[in-house]
Length: 305
Image (cartoon, rainbow, N blue to C red; front, side, top):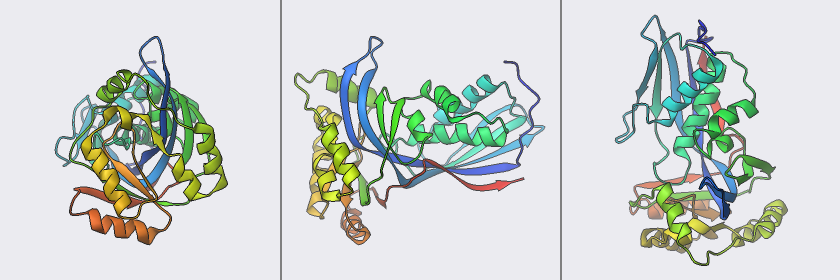
């Protein structure tokens, strides 16, 4: 499609990009192209980045990223930038000037919490609104999947069983609980985590059917029995093991690494117990947050016409 003379519908737009936790992550095969086939249950949580979009009309056509987080890329390697360009290519719009995106980055990097994918999904949805293009969820997911396997989930709501490479999704009930999330200083590269899995001779397997029944029952204690992450076995970092132990020491019903790590979450039945754990751990871990499951993966904060 060729660029259209598209003017944004709004002066600016502010959105939230919610992070995720993997409540279950298993690998069930490898495609011919090298992509791993998954059974994973992902949960949006109440921790988020904020993206503020504004277009300087009359300015030079292009993108500008602003963020004061050290190490945050401000060029075309960033998934926010890639999302904008992929959206522009698909719809044929022009930005209508300089598209400036200011990012308040709160989700940690290389943590397994989907921060980059969440930002990417939020950018796709924000542009769909900003330019009034009215693309449906399937089309946005098609664009997003080319940018990252977790992006289609981040475009959806709540709790999902994700299969294939992450694009086949089924809605699930959300657990009634609280999470305390901590991140050890060590970081984990997602490609390296999957390479480590490929070296396992006899990887453990999840009990997916039991997990799904426990989740549907609403019994948080049964649900905790079947939390599982095969990449935790593959990566096998002492810092991750220590984080799990510390969360259990602080009363967590269960503790698990999310995604390819290195963030670890503990499950608590009550908010006050999660908060008490966080207070005990905040001096040990630079990233220590309490959160809960949320129904949305994306939310508007404000719109200025």
